[in-house]
Length: 341
Image (cartoon, rainbow, N blue to C red; front, side, top):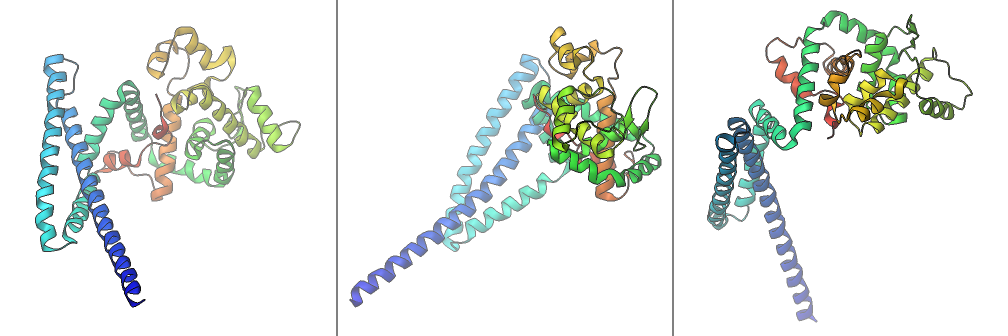
């Protein structure tokens, strides 16, 4: 019996030792993997910046050669790590995972630096193709619009917005739309001065001719026979339902959805215009919007960006001062994170 008990204890010790060993290997693998991925992303991003272009011999061949070189360097580095880890393990079993964690920590610090963000952006433009190029172009239009806006008057408008935040966020949650973008729509439509306008717009979101499907959805949600456009809750829910409808029509593209929101359902709406002319995105639809406000989505997203900054900092930093431009770009623009091809 004593022998049997000893065997069980030895098996438990072996099992515990094996588990600790695999746990250390797992930590080491994750650490080295994170460091390797960050290094490869940085190298590919830098390569994409250096050889950007469409020439076969001047750009595409050098890029392909560079990718091959990065792969070889990564293979050599990992092989070198295999040699180094054996030496480290002879000194202490915990040394390889400790070094792996240290490498991952350094990589994560590097990934927060502006240079790495630029490299990732360059790689994203390369991989994302026309969709990413469109997103970057739109983003810089939004940043430029924010830069031209007077921070003092914008801050006063956002102070007025405080009282409407709960209602707008309720409406956004009800229809699964971005609350910051919806606040941007209200800013562009009424500057948070609900009123009746000469062009027929009413209330916080200046509702004019909403799609019938959106009206029916809000009526059902509220359990009412008719909507009151001057009731801020009715108005906000109708705006959110309308934006949700256009997001679905435009395959989740917030820029096209906002353009469709502004155009409304007249003449079949933006979807009909795009189908008529064979346009597939904002770049290809622009030439056909000569008499329509093409800058509307830019104004909405600029206001949404201001709202995000204001909520985060309690103020609106000037874009051109110090390193504000880089910091604001890192904050990101509401809605554009979800831009899809």
